[in-house]
Length: 276
Image 1 (cartoon, rainbow, N blue to C red):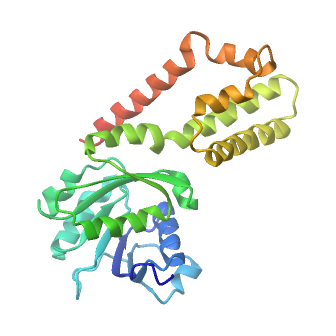
Image 2 (image 1 turned 60 degrees about the horizontal axis):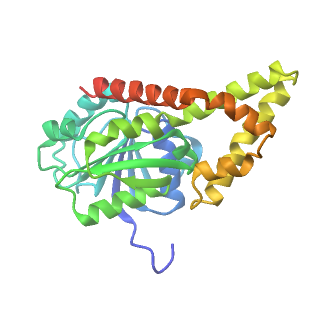
Image 3 (image 1 turned 120 degrees about the horizontal axis):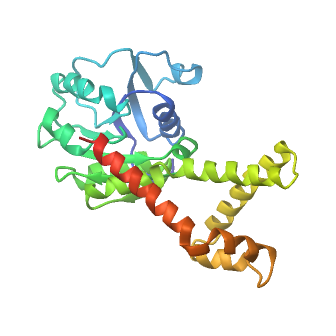
């Protein structure tokens, strides 16, 4: 921390320490974002987390707190969220900010169980957030103070690019685009590698070439954020060349664009169904 950094969060409660929860916890510790973190998870913590003096590990959610945590981060599976909130409601946490990374669960679920005046932020990180390279969308209810929003920005922003939404209805579209998006990119790598095999490349070399092509292209896009993706594509495409020949197939009748539109619409609609 530097002199310009805000003070660490006094007390943070993390409920659920699975892959995403533990990855976020490691980032918070690395950035010294909290002085004391209570981790509620039935599983033992990995070695270096178990040894960190800033962490208190509880196998069950505490039934009461000497002082309300400044923020309660909820990182559990959606199917057990309601029971977790019921337990926390019994612990009378009234002043805490609830920060949810539980997929598909709207803010109203929290308000119905905890009370309509409970400060709640819903967020949607994608899996690259586990290595600090994610994109996270977040939306706050009307009871979140500017200070609480800033606190959430620090906790979420250390895992990647944070985008605040004004309307929760957009969260299903976010889930379809960036939440599920890494799977689309991995499918692209698979498809490119298999196509390379069909051209005679050994499988391991085809996969290595496809994977690094996507990694390098993403890095190039990141290096030039002000250049539109369409322009980056055109920069690689020489008239009458090999790339143009391939793109004529991929872009014929806008078929690929339509596939993506149909795919994202299906993901959005599934998200709406799961949230009810």
